[in-house]
Amino acid sequence: VSLIETEGGKAVGLCGIDGAMIKCVKKTDDGFDYGFVGEITEIDPAPIEKILEEDYIPVIATVGIDSEGQVYNINADTAACKIAEALHARKLVFMSDVPGILADCNDESSVIATICTADIDKLIKEGVLSGGMLPKIASCVSALDSGINKVHMIDGRQKHSLLLEIFTSNGVGTQIVRPDSVM
Picture 1 (cartoon, rainbow, N blue to C red):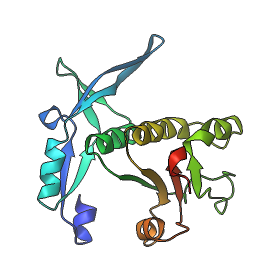
Picture 2 (picture 1 turned 90 degrees about the horizontal axis):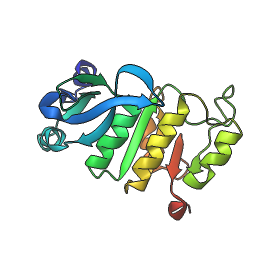
Picture 3 (picture 1 turned 45 degrees about the vertical axis):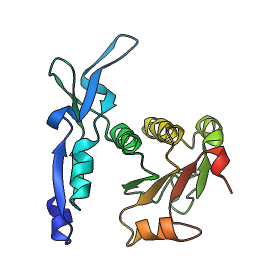
């Protein structure tokens, strides 16, 4: 919040447990205990919409709460996708410290400009998508399936990367689209 405000923006910090904005259940897979890690069951977009209506940028701490009042940590990528779904967003942009999805993880110039969801299984088999990228990609596919038009992954270190990705024909990162969106 303070960094956004330092740059002249207006931001408000929200926490997923504020007003039970992020509802969840304890995450369990095959009996494995993840501790206090939750899976989202519902997003209440009203607090976010109120902040947006007041022309503030919401900065959301991704923790959720269950029906008993227990607080859980939520994967930030998953939360971003679920929040975008709840807001009926047209686009979702992930900014990180890499230029996009790379064909070769050792070569930052090997950015894959467009990935169609139909090609994801092939990219997983080839090892292009692996490790921590798998839950992010799964969340992106879910977001696309919910009606979001495109998901972008761009390098936040690059000046004007958001504008270059969205408003140029080639972009600077990776866009993920459904098969019916490929041109």
